[in-house]
Length: 212
Image 1 (cartoon, rainbow, N blue to C red):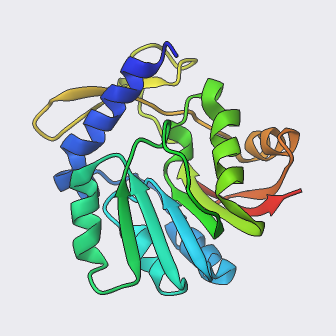
Image 2 (cartoon, rainbow, N blue to C red):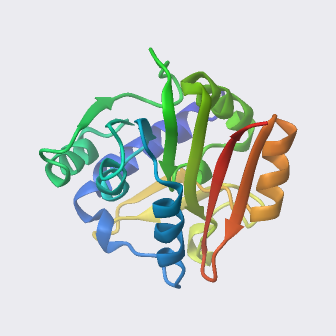
């Protein structure tokens, strides 16, 4: 697809930012609502985490799951996450989620701050992947945000291509689709998913549910 160079640059960005990722916070509250929602959801059984990054959510998933399989395209992020969850029932796989194919199904599929990095033309294909990963009665939980600064909008507000910088000023392009909760829930319904999407008091939203 024509977005291949952009997605390659997005992977390069997450490889480069790994060591400083946790210092690039998003202003605003609401994170505690998401954490509480995940605790209520209780991701039990065999859990698949897509794009775990430095393992902040992996650590929480491992408290409930029998086993967590985490797939990320950045070996640098995987190294950080591995250290964070050392000793927990977690295994990692380094793979590009836009080409990766699952070899089995899972009780839960989780992804944190990943869906907004999926270009809209690939949205349906991504959810086909989620479907392939889920057991017949499997559940989905995700968390994300629609936060974009004016400086990031290098192609204008209507474009999902943004530019982000490391602390040293190095710039990378990436995808950031500013989903809104109601719009996202409706879009998922058209694909056959029954997923409730909830907006927090801050910039975050979460979704939970499964196939319709």
